[in-house]
Image 1 (spheres, rainbow, N blue to C red):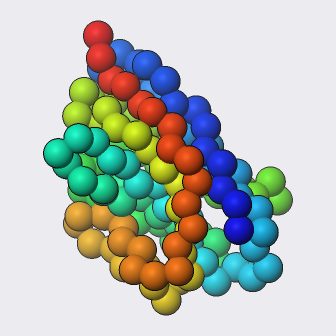
Image 2 (tube, one colour):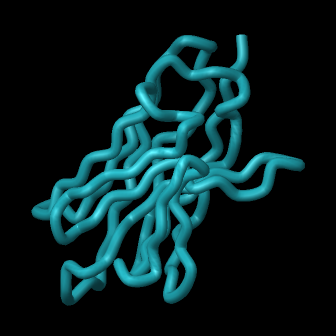
Length: 128
């Protein structure tokens, strides 16, 4: 499994940005792809994830209503549309995948407990 994330950059507060993750190497659809972010002193947060099987999506409360995750199974791409960006959204964003049985989600976001694969991160900076 290979993952490649892109789309990061510098954006002003209140602006929008779309991240894309191209995934390859899957032979079944019993997995989830998620977007995680890391910032200094904040650790890793699973902001959103989506099931390749049925499209069920989950969001951390910190981004709910502002971010939207979507998938294109033909293009093997998962996108994260980020709106109303705030300075606290500044982080390196990673896309990762895990089997559905190893995924949980709650108000704190998505968690991949085992079997994950990760792509390189893309930096998002929200600043005026």
